[in-house]
Image (cartoon, rainbow, N blue to C red; front, side, top):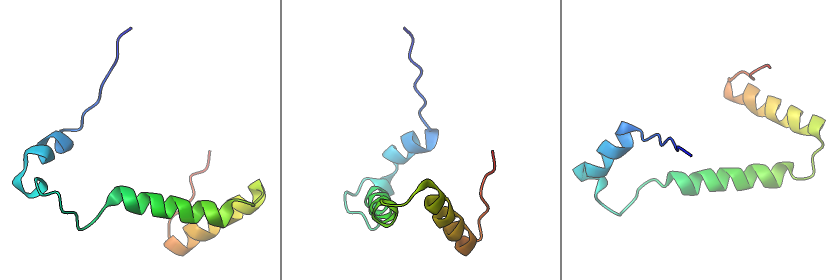
Length: 70
């Protein structure tokens, strides 16, 4: 079996850049993603599918983004 591995060049390049050598982070994207995911989960955990759709539509309208229609 063959495996394909995709490595974005910006990640490889960033690894060797001096400004990314520091272990001190001012912004932790993973932590932020987890906090947002946990907040959405807590807000939507008991919603029906229709309620969840309305929730998403409301959030999209507030952000000015449009929903992707299938």
